[in-house]
Length: 480
Picture 1 (spheres, rainbow, N blue to C red):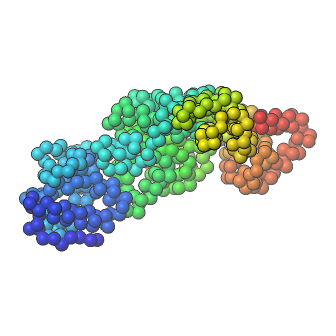
Picture 2: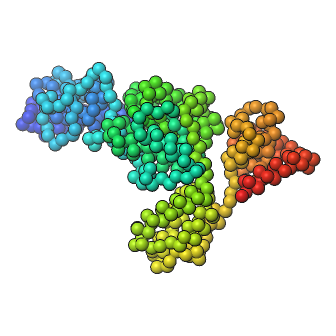
Picture 3: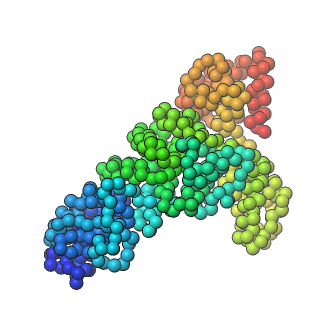
């Protein structure tokens, strides 16, 4: 730990620069002892305002930060000051925005509350309203608003539920759990909710972050022995939004903390919004008690886009691209062609459109069908229909009227085991996944189980016409 050794006689209002220098040395010592994470959360937002009659005056952006530092780091600050030759009787914290002034603040600043500390407020950019300390959140994309979200049948329920949460009033479901494949709009809706909540009430504390960032922050809190600060921050927000929650699967300590954070917020009637690439019951490695909590709210599936929705998205994006590229127009049949050919996800669709406009702008060609096929040859080849294991599981579950969780779970009754074998057979014949990969996707089963299922269905198809017809029907639907 570094500490300054300047004599106290330099610390008066005529030598404010010396005072500031010693405070910088104190900050350096705190950074060494606390670590970067705790320092940036608690000490960085403080502003030194002056020293008078043995009282160090500090300004904090919120009462919670001032109260926390006073309780947990006050002795360290006084000890570092003492090492520097400064006699400090006490620390005086006040709530005030940062300013250029260097003077004691108790006369014109709100005193720090000690009865009910509050956490720093998070705007969509995860910062306090006065530009103070960063909260452990992720920045939001200004493009992802409700106005730019194209609604169609595959996502209308998810959109309506997100709109309801964004209104900010009492909601009958908590949490809201959005799930679906890549590029279907989960993150877009979460950003839109955060923007809308903050626009309607800037004082509302909204925290959006990825599950990976939640885990990183928790690990940092463990490393620097600041888990209490982590808990206070995450449990004192008004709305918590966690994206891609499947990434905490298998991380026992992180799941434990997420579980308790979830319960604490629900008990306070605070809203939670979660997203993942699959339904809670289908996330392998996620604790049953967390699955149960996630399923107690509204679980909404964002279905793969249909032709009409893709065309609508393309039309909206084409208007924006045309404005960016001096009014370059695109033929309607090109949009229709792209909506038919690129069905994997919206991001690929948008990327293809961006490439077309860039190419047309650079080489001075109009965007017609010939130019599209030439410019997007690689994208069109890659976008040829590819069946996924997730699609197969969903389609088989719908066809046999069984739950997807049962297909992936341990049940062995004939009503479940036969559809499971069909799904494994189709996964082997319609995808490039290896036997171990298929087994892991079906609830962590061994590859020998997949081999048995494939052989069983092959045998049944030869002697049972009904099974043969069902498998062929499912194959055609999946490849359509």
